[in-house]
Image 1 (cartoon, helix red, strand yellow):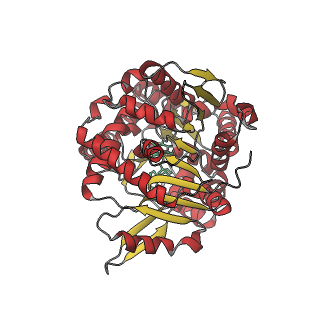
Image 2 (spheres, rainbow, N blue to C red):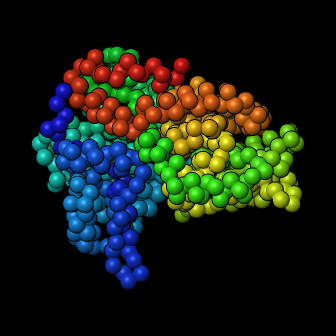
Length: 491
Ligand code: ADQ
């Protein structure tokens, strides 16, 4: 297995940098942060690499953006190539098919889906545009790794354009059960596209099982070879691989930074404020899949059922703004804020407000300080590909307790240390909150130790290496890490 000779090409909807126009009208670019960039950047640097994606701007001259991005090459050690999108493409491909069709459908929320032919048409043309941009930069031995639901169809156009390179795909969001997936008018096209990849990675065994079941129902009955972390799907014309690769975080970076001086300074200030109370923390992007109203209802239920918590437990809910030009998101924000004010109105007394609510992105240091002061983190998505907040909390707080939705991809991996809950069951969630508040220290320590060990062992570097191994191993038995699959399975 010699992967070293292959240059790595990463493709994602957005580039790993933020391009902005400053007040004087000139363009500025800042290297992005986040687990994926942190993990892939060294790999791209080592073997040579390119990251292709949309810059985030619509009206700028592509050449201007290109020049600006290439000025970063030396600093970051790999190249950035941008695709330009116009307003219509953003409307129909990005907001439309990606975020109003595939996103809700793949999270089982059929009522939120719009199935518009013009969305599909533009999704196709933008995927073609990405394929054409990629074709211009591709070399014979490059390994292409495409990310997420925005770009599933890219493979079809790449193959039509004569690109024969090995191509992998990773789906960051769940793959839905067959009875939900079949509602999609373009169900056969999307499945057919996924089957053209050499390797498709899913977050959990649940997602891969849903995928193979839809293939059986809608396409044909392939032969499945293997039953571990990676399987071969053998069809008449070709064989592809499908694997389970739970994404993770840079554990060490979170662990180290959480105890750094600037973070500790913030922790001390916040601890003074919450001296009398325990803190339970929610951190999410504003999204209807994250189960935020359900969590607030559960917190209200806990305060009603267990008066001992009044004045003793505060919920800090941090919400990062997201997709606000889609009506469902704006309505969700209104619903959340109404609930926060209802709960605060019902229970506050002088010196104690049950919910502290922030609607903004917070800095990394501030986020870590919240992770550290929170005795409990409550992560209750209705469905989630993985959920990195759960893992970030474990890496940042050795003393904490994690309440986790059984519908987060992370649950398969973290179930033995976390308190698993059904986010739709407000009574069970309230009981879990009460249990967490009163959990004996010895149990808390044992649970968090298990969680941290797991997140540490299967960190983001493991994830990248494991995916690349799966793409290049000539036989399934060649996976060095396959023996480690059991602890990640769904039990
Ligand atoms: P997301 O749906 O964005 O990702 P998640 O995995 O929870 O969800 O990641 C959110 C990230 O945003 C975390 O790194 C968190 O720290 C950060 N964040 C959240 N709120 C913040 C705030 N107020 N301020 C600053 N930062 C904040 C998709 C899928 C997930 C999958 C990831 C990665 O939906 O299921 O885990 O991709 O594959």
